[in-house]
Length: 206
Image (tube, rainbow, N blue to C red):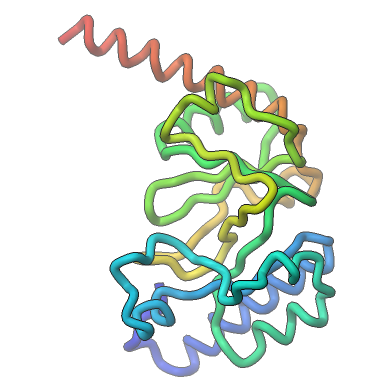
């Protein structure tokens, strides 16, 4: 989260970093959107309803696919959160931190890493190719959320309440090739089953 006490030089450097990341993703074809920051929401008197970055424009769906030059303009004079629309180029599965850690270990074990984003609220995002559906085991889980068509996610280094969004696994690790959605979903299902089994063991030992 941006600190009001930061020197102007720090705030400018942070804005430049956000702009550079936004432009880089846009050049790769990722549908970048400008998002609100905590300070912008608070200034509008609606801080109690703020949970995570949201698009700054109501017509954000019409901005999907904007050219990198247009994206650069959005981030030039003002600090925005860096959002990416899902459902066209990529999707994301949002899980809690514990499930995220288990799934990340499994992905490393099978040698198929996926880009993973961690948010300061303890939620993780697993980025994949666009999915057709979600397995019932995940779809029925309240703590699991599929970001597909009509949704969006924050990407690093977006300012967040009590911190910034950061990469747990950068896209470079995968050569910028997003993994097949079904493969990542299968690993998440396995991690969920392992989590359930561990919970049963703990209960039996209590």
